[in-house]
Image (cartoon, rainbow, N blue to C red; front, side, top):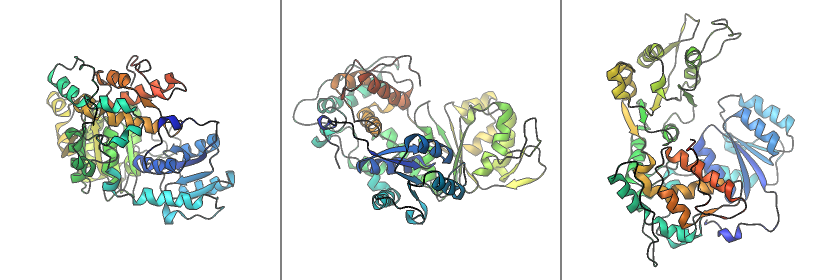
Length: 445
């Protein structure tokens, strides 16, 4: 269903939408369900786990809550019991058993079950099918009608940008001649091949989707390399979603975000009294991912001493908790990511070569935004629609799109998301973003 024109998105009065809370650790599932509920005129709040869902429920007072059958932090049974006690009027649905639950049935239960079934049954190819930008009806979407015409020049501008030094900005895009728009993607092939997590029809993005589809059904270790903000975590989520382990947890840990002294205990777990402050034992992230996928982000930041312990686990599938003499057998699929050139770091001794060759059995590279700048209009459209879940959908005019296309994007897609969010805030109640609101600031990412 096509969105309403921007001119119709300003309500005459403030009407409180029905609010639904979606709790799931699977970002792609949350995205699909949120899109469907938004189309059914729900305001959607999202949570990655049980604790966050509880906080969101207390602040948003939702009419309905949809909770995934597995949560990474809380026991589902206990959470449901406490939820019904604390929020007796909320229509509570889980993804298991067809979404049926004991307890009060709200007036919109069938609508919730319909949305849940659509999100669960959405075939990848059908979900991937994105209308070509050459279709005139897309002028009704978040991009301003003339901006869609200006977008036709972005592909040529991005090709020129790749031919010059990275610090040089491409010339501002010009309006395409009246009478039709150029397609910015690869046509029908892009609609069939690309994954929902990866926005863009450029050859570099389609290659990422192709590699994900090839390796996802296997247990082969995957190393994802790419610059900061290019979507490495989304690739890991897609690998897990398309694998036979998708019903088990995807456990992620950022190796650069945890102090070296605590990273070993965080990964492998520890027993009570293993070190100062360990008042009780704890299961590590690796063991928590048993049967599923372990995603080690920024693996290049892992200390050398801990790399040797990880190598032993990769080789034999056994781990030893800190302070324990017993070993535990764990079955996980390992996916790692880094913004560093690990192959080069193995030559300098900054990263163990034996561990590298075991983790980099299959390589996937996420391109920088400057390498697929022809996807800029699709990405702008995606982020504006995402922001439209909580506020009226805004559009961009040709001047704003030209300014975006001329930027170097050192922070890649993540920076684009933040720049558009900043512009939407600066625009206030205005429905159209202009070049005045496009503020790159200090490129905080």
